[in-house]
Image (tube, rainbow, N blue to C red; front, side, top):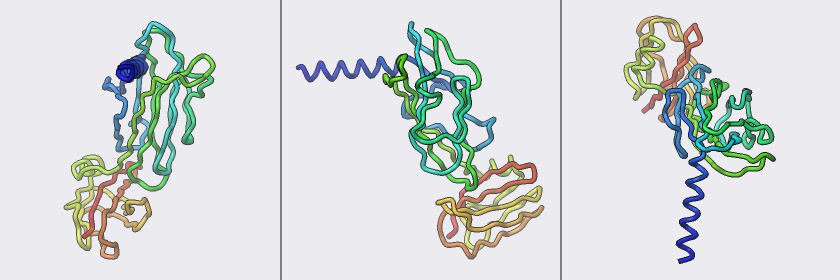
Length: 238
């Protein structure tokens, strides 16, 4: 019986900690513990904007830990009135000693966001962040809410056509990638580990890009046009 009561007490404590605040994104969607939130662009205007609401009648002190990352690149967090660039795993932003103060019933204002800026290789990247509360001395007092920010640069064929004006005939190919482009572009082919395997110039009109020298496997094909817009698509070479 004691074990049962202890289990119930732990459940209540966990629920109470997580119920102290709520987080929504820039569109008003609730961010929940364990969520995976995906972005397909590294443009800053595509950042994950967020608002934190204090659901209690007491002041809360909030910060974010950058828990883990599985790829290179530069992850950035803006919280507590400051932006932190090229942050390191294990750090807290803002520092736990100077957290975001959220008054009872209040919601944080504009400017809080996070985004990923891949440096060279467009590839899927996962970044785990943890919101948590601290006391007046900066000590961790729980209230964890952890989610994954996923950068996935690959898009569908319709997205590539709409955004870059490049039409690809198929994403399963043998010796060439058949495409048509409305403007000149640069095409780069990466393997799933982010290694650059091939670079080609794409001209205006219909053409076939030779990929006969590549091994049979999945690749990420990245296109960039003159104005700097860049998008990628997954292609499997048989």
